[in-house]
Image (cartoon, rainbow over all chains, first blue to last red; front, side, top):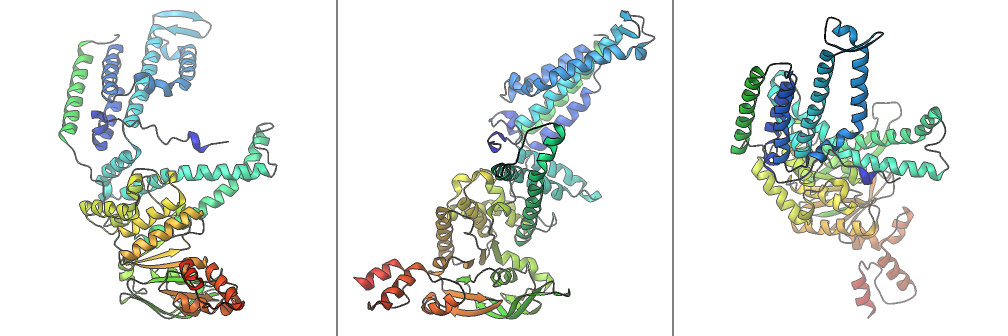
Length: 278
Length: 272
């Protein structure tokens, strides 16, 4: 019943690595570029090069690769099942492919199908690994600051950058508080004989109602308090607001941008030189 | 100076059933004063407090903060910068995920330059003695620490007045003492503190005690004057501090001791 004990927001691993020291904006932008590029790779060798680059970044960030991949564990059965289902039931998509490996009734497995779906699975794993490295090596505060700063470019076309960042910060701030509250309500209801996790699905869902309604009510009350407190502290949206923490690009950031650009050029050349199927 | 002139206030004033919360209140609070407002629930003390920083605008009468009328919309942010507020529930007033960011919230809102914000944040944390928790998340702090963070946030805004609306009522005794100690520090910094409370002993160190009942100020004066009138205070279903009660009992029993003793030290001095 101790929920708040296992609450870790995000999965930031504090280190003093070069990757951690990069400006969050650099990391967010480069990361977006990299995952976009990921969708243009269609060869095993291309993915291998990309994977080596990501592993190198992981190493630079001083994060054990196994640790970074740990989050993938619950998804592995899902990925395998998906792979098999796609292989078995997509024969019609590859109807004109001559390289049949196995055929039985409507199940028709071709080497082309195996190749296509293997590539998709590799892409999913690499995508996951890239996202994980970003969140492992960037604090939540850094991420929100970076997002706010990047979004503020769009302020002129009406994107409320500061307000969006504020919403995110408040959400993050209140998650642990609400978890505490949830725990208190659950204990209070259990003390009065409420059942929490018994019976079938419908019964269990019904048992959640006397917990969720008070939580909802108290959340609204907190929200009202918070609005008054924010107004008392002169909050009036992003207009005329300054930030204590200033983001500044350093030589390190330019190096990271340069290296990534160099890598992308190399990757493109490599894909040209080593054409499919490998 | 905060000047309250003949202020009346009704919640839902425009509806058929307005609730009259303040009736013709007059009050003046000087820079640097420590004022305690007491009264039982529904006496209008919190409503009055919300008038000092323009969270509420009087139905009748006027409130002036350093000669700015709270009715005047163009002064509203200047007033709120000058008059900070600490609320009852420490959890519902901290907005950021990190202590240091929360303290910076006020100065950021009023557009202070970044280097200056950092300087003020450091200074505020030093005064409130919370520098060691600067990068902790608010939910990892104790109640007393959270209130000190809230106070530091107002210090960093360089307010001249700090209103505290029952800041100790949800805290344990240790937390309460932390808040009282913070009030002493604020006074040393020359900042006015306006404390709303129903713990009478928190009023002992005040320059002025204001007693409210049914939306009116019924008593106003130094703690010694106010607590000397114990019978009237009891009639309002309020209490006088424990030490004062004891002195009164002794006085009733014929011991030669004044009826308005305010501290244990004073009591000892009179007895020995």
